[in-house]
Length: 395
Ligand SMILES: Cc1ncc(COP(=O)(O)O)c(C=O)c1O
Image (cartoon, helix red, strand yellow):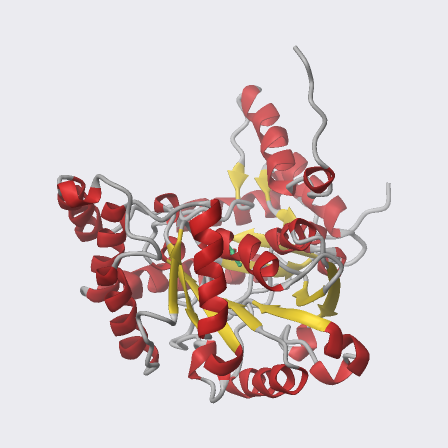
């Protein structure tokens, strides 16, 4: 069999930590060892039944059997308009301010390629969702990372950015509620973002993948609620997390018409649009009763409390996250995050993701996900206690 060489661009893509970890977990499982996997970020609960039912009806409609309309169905765009108005009080023009595609990961890959030429600079807070690093590589861009710290609420400080860097930056990528830190943005931070981006003429891409998951009764803000935001940026919202529709592959971008036009063209040329029946089901999800979304957030909130309280009780001091389905936990003193994650897997049979998987500024932390039942989370806490590894022992 001939083995063909990968392109330079493909070779430059980082290996995903999760796939390496999946291999390690499979090795344990082959030996009959039960691993509690708190590394994955795949929602564990089903899509609400009324959305599944809508898909079943829509599959039977012949109008959905051909190519879907370029740039998405009008009915889904109208649902998105209604959703943004109802949830955030934001007005959108369905013809010029909305793009629909197969999951927000498409927007992450596409937006830098729509707005940057090779060698241009992109900025985002670090640690970050690993796909952002891949997006930089796909666009053959340079990354200027904005390291964030726990004491600043994991929000970047725009004053620390040299003017010449800001002036040559072609995209600012933000993500709040944030994966992996679980931080949420404040209205003050979003106002500063608009000010900074406007001053330096930088388009803003706000990835709001966890927009529905805010804890302790706090609803995460939409970037577009900020005065001037729609002039300078777009927000990407996915059906994956809010409605447990990760497998359905549907998301949308809203905001600045010139960016939306670029994304629409990119999607048209590279992917084609989302299956019409999936668009119909997404429209139903956005416009019918939102009880399922509220209930899901309550479940994640309870799981967060169970995990964080449990870990604190056994002596691992962990800060509760403000949103997302992750807890970003500082590793006990003496350990690196890689060492501690390896030990958790080996001695407690609990898988988490070491912070460095989200870039070097993730060092000293691990990401623990809440997409497992409370019973499994409690069992994980018990196993960690029994493994007796929280106090660093030199070997
Ligand atoms: C920050 C962030 N953005 C985007 C995505 C991808 O979401 P989608 O399912 O819409 O492609 C994820 C998924 O884990 C994520 O964590």
